[in-house]
Length: 225
Ligand SMILES: [Zn+2]
Image 1 (cartoon, rainbow, N blue to C red):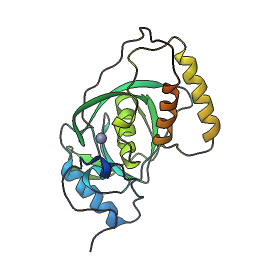
Image 2 (image 1 turned 180 degrees about the vertical axis):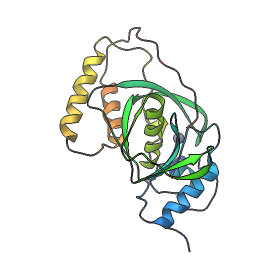
Image 3 (image 1 turned 135 degrees about the vertical axis):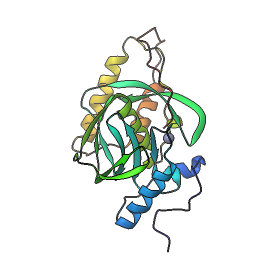
């Protein structure tokens, strides 16, 4: 009998329409076991992360290769810092081969989850994580978590506006204002969807008219997620 949310094993999904589906909550052990097994069978040494929708499972789970180890998270959620901490992350995606984009991500996130499994040697299930939810992630770890979380929301790296290589002099104050407005609207929410953040940022970028000037060097990362 098919398991709800678990499609056939058809390899890494590259169809963008498929990837835009929003994943459902993992509700039972049957779904969880099938998801963990499928994710593990597709983890490769070059993958920093892999979400269940990328392997045709439209359930909320992903694999992350963090600096502290390798893990699979069940029903992950993200929350973001109060302060503005945007950084440029250059990303690739196993579902969008050959493309890299530079986009803005939070430098730090808190990763909440229902369950977490440690992965030994990259591909073997070791058991439940000893450290309870939430986990604080920074830099590359935080970028990968945001990239994989986006997949659960049907959002792709291509959906973001490209990060500007140069910044207008008043951009910091624009960002602070936008962040303040967002916080006002979302206060009390556990997390806010990446899709709404993206739309807000796109709107902001469209209204920007000042010419750009030279700014801090953009950090470049070219790793697959
Ligand atoms: Zn991806």
